[in-house]
Image (tube, rainbow, N blue to C red):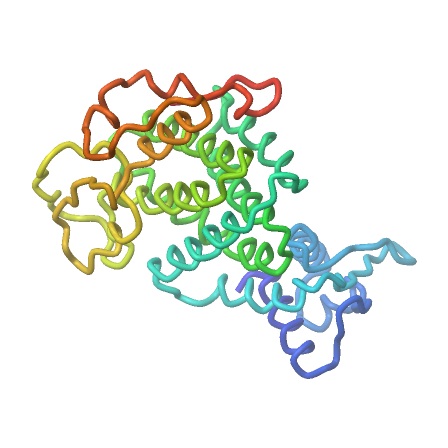
Length: 319
């Protein structure tokens, strides 16, 4: 077990037994290394990881020691135990994804477009749009973007729960890369959908934002041909028609039914939702979802997204 996980386990036990309280100073790095039987340099690296995760704050002590202190924030009481279990338990992928959908849709339903997280989201959109970005950096920013979305609800405990999923989300989204037909198209799609989600929050349409993020998460598996419960398909299902985009809640959780589900008025692709939002904000009428041309008739329709929806001073990416 990695040293920082061992420290988390020690903290969990001490908190549970009442030997520690939030905000309390912990033993020095030298003493903790002795307690856990590891080298002092290894312990220092572990403490830095825990500081980055928001569990501890580190201060310089006497004789070149490091003094860790448990943070006082309410979310910290759940953070160590949850991060420990997420790092060591073998949770089914389906459980992780459904928990993520639950947290993100709730957060966006309750998002505040005046939250400080909006500035963080703008920065992350800009960074994810760079042409020279590496695959690993893109996915680290991807996870940070979704954590920042949850922060927009200004609920520190929900944000802490989402942050505890960081490593799990990074690992499974990276694993999906090898299953998508063409990564260059996928990355453009992700950028466009992130922009659409941000735009909906910025416009105050929380219902649309929650709907878009749910479809965004679930479509990752539709595109890659991966069932979160069963893994990659050995044989692709026979297509029943063109799939124009992600379909709404329930498509991924097919319980073994690999047949394609056509988009309907109830199972609406992200593109249609974005088009409807654009029409509402531009004062145009919105055609019926039963009219196929209302969704797919004009491939250039996404260019009508108002520039005010995008990050300040940054060119909007539509993929």
